[in-house]
Length: 159
Image (cartoon, rainbow, N blue to C red; front, top):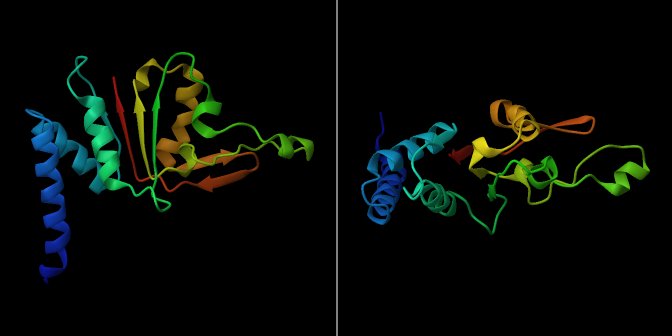
């Protein structure tokens, strides 16, 4: 097995972990768990008391794993009981409605995100939580009659 092929990515990962641990004191386990989630392309939910750097960890990680100059973008949103699906998935297309099509304009919204952070996820209402199911679990978004595969790699949430 040729280990030189993985030495550079491993070094980058170790550097990222060291940087995050240096910025977030006494959060080594949370940093490691978040990095494992990104590598495994799985989601992570951080639960803890207010002021324990949950949001900061995910925001710092989002900055490091996404590139604003490319299609690799992050989506960060604070959820409340008043959050609507339009805020996460984009508004309904008026031009589409004129053609008897129900679809959303997803530009810069969750369906186009590579990485997502849904802050205070458990404060969202049931409409929003149910709308998130297929996107989070199957990485698909139903946009009108089309079912779109989303570039979603990893999602983080906190409570």
